[in-house]
Each structure stands twice: as structure tokens, then as C-alpha cells.
Length: 357
Image 1 (cartoon, rainbow, N blue to C red):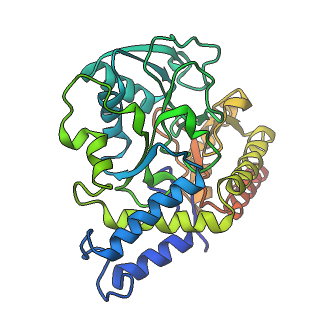
Image 2: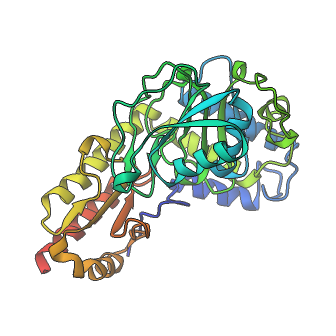
């Protein structure tokens, strides 16, 4: 039976990525050594790092004056590194979920003055705040573009009078982005790019070196720029895996091409959720719904069928559909590597369950 992987992260990877990484685990670049055991300063791995960084530049059309880095520590470490390097006097934060809240907390607790310009916490983060005002005197607006837990997504670069900083962990490379509007973009790799353990950072060089506080060496973006992401030993296998995904994405036609596929997948699933009497989206406004993480629950009159539907879906090879405990219900993660076939299988499963009940 074919398995359909809807896990939210670590999550599905392209078959190409898995196959090429498996090969390199045994014999990397013809060295007869594993990518797990070769020096990160060998010419073979340096070539991997350089190509991966260059492909991100190419796929996201990163302008001159920015540096692409591969770091570690996930987005969680970036919650601290971002304000430590960029917050001079005051920063604005948009609070749209758990990860946005954690980023805000790190900035406020350890770095400096933070203004929460808007929050959707009043409705359990089931919408994206609109028409909020960003003070003109802040150093940047930080936001989380996609919310894996609550199923909301900001699909367009916010139009604000200050530079942007964004956690794009779960939707990076899923749609075009105007990088020139950002001082910093960061993303843990494990949701839409590669194996867990690598973190992508895109930082505007001119935004650095403006703060008065001392920054620990390891937490200073300039350290990693000066050392080409090799200040400390990088996560060699995850970076290699990311490179394979980047090659796969380029071969598909790039970010614009994958965006079309992502739209098709999301529209198909949301149409069935809205049609099927048994299910309901947790995000009322279609404009706020995530293409990456589709969250849905049983309608109240069918609430007792939640566990049976989960078992029914699992028996048909649909894995990782359980919703986060703070939302309940179900969550289908439709990342770049998930084929349309898997979404079709989920839709058919929902229809079959409706027919049987």
C-alpha cells in the first residue's frame, strides 16, 4: 500500500532528495567515504555548500548585498539572533501563533523594546490581523509567514514603511518573495527544504553592525558571513539534503512553477472540506488559509467520529494527519514535495468516509 506523508515536520522530501542522499551516505562524490564522515572543509563538501547557497540566491532571486547562510539551531535560535543583531532601539512584532509568540518573547526578554502591533490570539490564532499600524520609528517588523499549528498564512509581503524580518520555516520556496523588502529571512529546513538540522538565513549585509550591544561570536551573523557558513562544523548531511531538494526544485521550473502546484493542491482539499458536511476548516476566512498546512475538524454533529475518521484514513495509508493538540482535529501538510496524488487520496478518503457514515 502506498503511504501518503502529511506530517508537519520533519516532513516529506522529494524522492530525488532521499535517493541522492542515501547514495552519498555510502559514497559521497566518488570519494568512497560517507558524507557523514568527510571533512566539511574538503573540496567536495565546500562545493556542496557553495552550490546550495547559490541555488537559494537563484531560486528566490536574492539581490546583491545579501548573504545566504546555512546555520544550525533552527528558527528557535533565530528568535534570539534576529533581534540581537538588528534591534537598535525598538521593533514591531505581529503575533499570529505559537512561533510568532516565542519570537516576540525572546526579543522582549533578552534584547530590547518590542511593540506587538496586532495579535489573533483572541480567536486561537484562526485569522491574520488586518489594517494594523506599524510605527515608523521601529527598526523592523517581524512576522511568521505560515503558521503550521493553526493553518493560516500571509501570502504576500506586507506593505509597511519599515524593513521586514520573517520566519519562513514552513513556506520558504513555496512561492515568490520580494527579498529586497527584508533585512532578514530565516527558515528551519525540516518543513519544506531538507532534513532537520539545517537553518537557512538570508541577511542584508547593510543591516548589520548597527547595534551597540556586544554580540557573542557564535550569535553574530557577521561571524558566519566572514566564514562562509563554516565558522563551526555545519550540519553536513542536512545541507547535502537541502542541495538535492534545491536541484529538484530548479528542475521543476523553480518557485513560480511549484507555487502553481501548491495552489492546485490546497484548492482541491479546501473545496472538499467546504463541501463535505462532516468537516469544517478551522480558518473561517479563505484569504487567511494556509497552502502549506490545512487544518480542519469534524463538524459538531459528527464530533464523535473524529477518532474513527483518523483510523479510517490511516488504514488507507494516510499518515501524519493528527492536528496539533491546541487545535485538535486534523492537519494535512501540503509542502512542496507532497504530490497531488496524495491530496487526491485524502479527498477520496473523506468522500468515502462520508458515504459510509
